[in-house]
Image 1 (cartoon, rainbow, N blue to C red):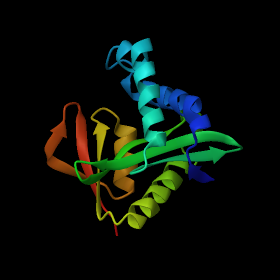
Image 2 (cartoon, one colour; image 1 turned 120 degrees about the horizontal axis):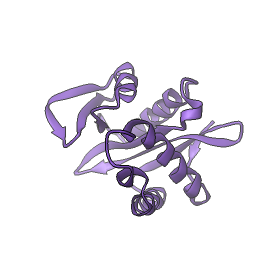
Image 3 (spheres, one colour; image 1 turned 30 degrees about the horizontal axis):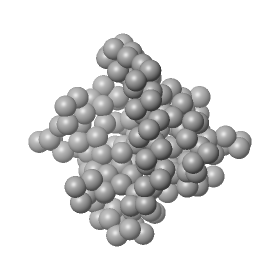
Length: 155
């Protein structure tokens, strides 16, 4: 089941986000940068703002009554942007990411978005393969630091 996030989901979302990020950052950047106390507090605060925000959305995927995935999007500089899409590693390969992505597409269509942007960590090959399967195309001329820029035409 896909639903809008609620304030009571905050701790669950923040913990899921931390577990998912660790899978692609571990061994590539210092642990403090993705799992240190200051970063965990920053991430939790960012998720709280995202849940409260009215111009974007945060969607939760539930499986067996628990949050198993989360996606967030919002306009950034006038462009709809998928800012986060994470599936709890214990739930990978069960269609949760695809269901979240489909729900995002519906939300973007409702908002009149015709093109969506995202950034994906250059070493996160699993995510890159997922996005390619969903139709995202790389912007060969642009990077955002250690992240690749991808675009999706919303049809």
